[in-house]
View (cartoon, rainbow over the protein chains, first blue to last red):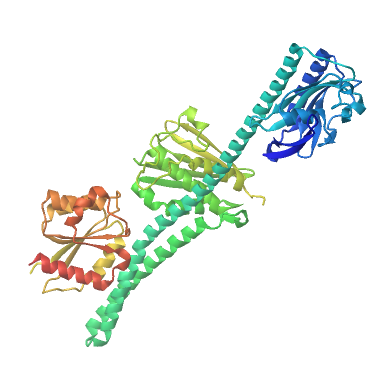
Length: 439
Length: 135
């Protein structure tokens, strides 16, 4: 909350009054036409040349809205420095209505600034924001002596409370907009977090997969070493050739397992590479899809899921392979969790070249998605699983974010589109990716 | 003298190949080694049903299901009431034992992490198992 200092003419004092915080300032356009109509009506009913809504600011007060009248001496957005002892300053400083029937007949009011404009009679009420700080005043002014009966005074007061209701509405809307902004920000962060989580899960999957070939290599290498150490003690040719055979046998196994480890690492590197837009290149779509299946071999095996990649398996595109791999990882996760429910199934990926896009169909033979769910599946936090965070054979992605991330990556990073069709034979996701992403 | 019978249970066949290579010339207290292999828990249970003379089971846990290995332990110790056969868990995971299988841990002779297993470790534990089996 801010504050401003007004001069109360009646006792010639300066008083500090609260005003609304800068960021909550009313946007004039939002209420202007309604308030202007109101003031036109007031000026007719009160038969005055001037009906005003004044806005109090830190060092001045401005004509926020006014009626249309030929004899109205004021102009919209006209400002007057505080401290001159305006009628409105007294209304705000005393927090009560003010009625001056004729300023010229009052020792206090006869030399107030508005007299110069011939505005010698005044009736005004304070207008407050819901938090109690001042917006300003609503007032009527005339160039002749005026006394208003109670009915008129009540009417102006009621008009004032209409304005206060508008201000309350405005604040509520403002707060609502802030909440929505905050929610959207949170959603963006969640999407980022979920994307990171997938990479972490992938890493732990690879770590497990790699333990076997590395373990076999370690044991075999130590075995070969042991045999070699005994080499110098060999006396006869037969043992010598047997030992060489043993070493050879070990080396073959060692080689094979080191290659398996290397290939796991490279498929991990392939899909976890920097997902920034700059990381685009020309690649064979089918190769990357296969690497995703390979990196998820463990999950697929546990869930008895087999797969096939067919169609134009030679097709190359210029796009971002990291994000594309993430899309497939999520789709596979989705099929296992929601299509097969851990009870096994088949996934087939069909790649087709159209005139200007690469069309990829991802199909599972799971239980499918009901029609009324179809349009919601890409929304954040949407999940069909009643039990959140339920594990199915090592997979856990019931955050309701999986397909939302898919859509986000496909549209914003890969510049393509995705839709889903489904029946009781399974779900089909159709991706349309540009042959070349324009960076 | 009968050879010492070992069963390797692992979904990666190279784990078996490696074990066979390392143990093929091992002879402990006059006993040679006879190695058998199954690639899943179900087949291991089937094998153990008809072979009562297995002295050592080298067992992976995560195979056709996440706890397939523990089911083998359960079968051997609780259903066949066999306490003579040594069981060593050989796993890629160093993770904790799931609570529902905790009671089986007593029935296990040891855990070996795949990446810490040298030929010496493997030889050592086979010899130990032979000593125990024929004691």
